[in-house]
Image (cartoon, rainbow, N blue to C red):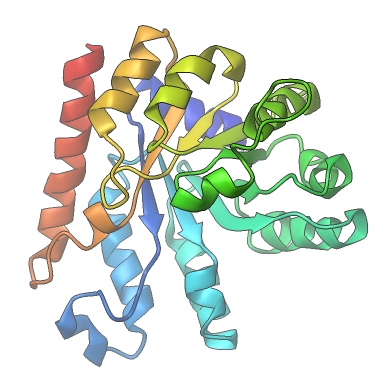
Length: 269
């Protein structure tokens, strides 16, 4: 099953929550910190509690790379633990000159066996092409991100009258000849989402920024529903995986993701 099929099967079931595994040792339940590998045990607990109800998992590589070799091993074991029918997104935000990007692509897709990746496109086509050559994977290209500093570059107006992020969307559509491009579009940018959603065409959209960053799940879902689009996933990290610090945290996460899904279904059904 390729990446596109994994995502489509889940979204067709009206599962749109992408579980962010930004696992931070300082935020996991206290009782797990006594374990030999607390982050891995925490991740396994999250996956067990949510995999039936999740659209995908987004693994933030920075939260593992900072631990060196042991962190990369935890990353690998976490990926191996995720069920094969659930999309795995490497949130690595790669993008470099062609031969370097080729090695990054080999790492994420061939070694770690992730289904998709986040990319920044600001070095142009050669920086994303090695990833796009994997036709059965999905490359989520940064369009408009959810952080406040997005205005520094992404919202700058170009001579052709477009904002930079709009030019990125246009280019990504051009690059999408194998239907393996997606976009990252921050849920904190509701006005821009509403005015640009028609330019997304059939690309899958990854939306960070709901919850702790201030984005509204209900507003995002309504926008896609109103525009007759279903190919989107809403990333939730802190608002889901740290919902409970007690020994009952798994049960709380299980209930929370079902609550998110029910909120979505009330809008679209």
